[in-house]
Length: 269
Length: 268
Image (cartoon, rainbow over all chains, first blue to last red; front, side):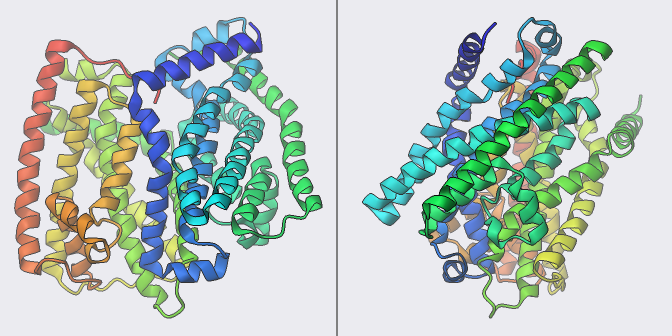
């Protein structure tokens, strides 16, 4: 079974699910607003938006709606890769997945793409209205840039997610508990909510290893209106792409290790 | 098997499974610390140098306390039923003739240990990121009434959510959404007085806002929007009424699945 057939199957699966359970679709669209509200409420209880503007250089509302959208986009795509083996085990479908002749690597590369298409929908009801409200016509262009970079961020994280999924499931079994540590850590290092240039040096170095952290920095620079020299933009895009490419064979190998382990030890039902 | 034996068996099973075998407590607490860092770090960017960091930290600790209490009710109790459906155990529990409430009673101590660990961890994170929270009990009676009414409201909330879950096989996103919206919209995170009037009216129409108002008042942080005595009276009577309704609703859903069978659950 090739990539195209897998993609078609995944699209059917995801869209059938979305059409059947509209709550999931509603959540994708509402979540950026909820996260923004959550941080704004805690933030304003701690101080004032004026202090935030002084420190970061942008109004907190557009900043956090963009951050929350990026977070939801990345989670919506990467979670599929990270959680699929666990859900397959819970639902009892893992033995069939493992025993099928399809390449697991092709399968895991195909998994995030249907959800990626939903990211556009989520962005169209979150970042577009807010950025246009704040910046007018410029906001429309900013929103387009943010949307493109968010999609790229989600895509570039897929191979690292494969490395993590393969390693975690090989070493610790299909453990959602370990994933619950890996996910927030990955999201912190992404720098969406707390810009990485404000992080301590150790965290910055760790953040550089996450491909999408570079595109997220680019996205924040676009929003804040910092200087966008062509060489720096290309360097960030290049670093993100190079890291994603480097993680591809590692992800491939990690998934194969996990598959081999399942074939050797069997699948718990 | 007596009710006490059932509760003991559930407690023993969960302590062995969560604390000893899977290290769920330790991993869960560590995970929570990371989520807190993720959400509190950006909030620190709002911090004005003119407001005492200890006061800010105390507000944050109360907000976290209320939020994790909602999380415990959602994920320890309501989600437990969904978990039992996943594993095909719910039918056996129902057929055994034992009340599902005994299951919750067995889990309760585990949840309380979890809450204690997470609050201690949150205290440590806040101390590291902002300053040590300053805990002063200004009004002990109000604080007690606040904690008691919060506990009652959360049990009722878990039963409502659990009832909907078992009768519809509803999905995780709905639970996540409710778990986020409720504490935000009902003054769990920020004092009602600091919220817009419309939100205040909505929050006061629910039983969720009063316990949070009392807890903050008890700790000497803010005065409730209504008079303290009236807030206490409404908090206790509304929470008890809410619990009675939730028990009735939950039993109705149990009867429904006895007729219709247990629902299948979806991926999310």
